[in-house]
Length: 289
Image (cartoon, rainbow, N blue to C red):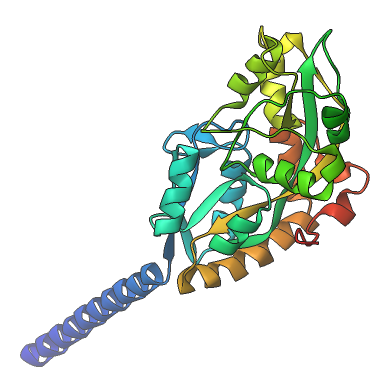
């Protein structure tokens, strides 16, 4: 009788062990499947473009760091591997496929939109003209041309360069003398204006603001807003990123509608450009028209 009971007990124990093994195997399989369903996206941003992007403990800081963090949280199927590097290296890496996604306040340019995939708008920049206090003033792009002001050179891979080129094409009677340059920080360009080397610089207000309180910045005057510019994510062309793009566009619409874009714009860019007159009609407009 005892032998029979012992056999039954051993049988129950054996069954329990089998169940535990199977349960563990299923859990590990489920975990493996879950991990395999997450796609890693390599993201790069310029390392010297405060307050939009800058290094922050191995990740991207600033406006786009906050935006990436929220998107990463919402899009469970993706994991963003972030890095910062020189702006020209961002584009070289993006075109080669080293990076899937490039983040900064990238404006529209025909070449960029032909070379890379691009998202719908992810922010609005407030464009300003910066001049030296006591010097020549400008409150419009036309002023720069008619007053024959010298414009600080602009990096040729910066969307501001394409912006002025586009203005010149549309305004042949009031062309601005545009000079190209390599990578340059807002601080360096605005220093050239404060010391009189050039008469005027064109920058988003958010790029000017951190410089305004420096010894050089206190010598500068900033114009009222001369317009709003949409910014976009840029992506390497691939099937994987085509799928990512659809998810990003859906997410950006949600974050605009629920006020998150306005919230981080005010926090990082010193003002909520989404509250500006004409912001709603400007945001996400077709840049080719």
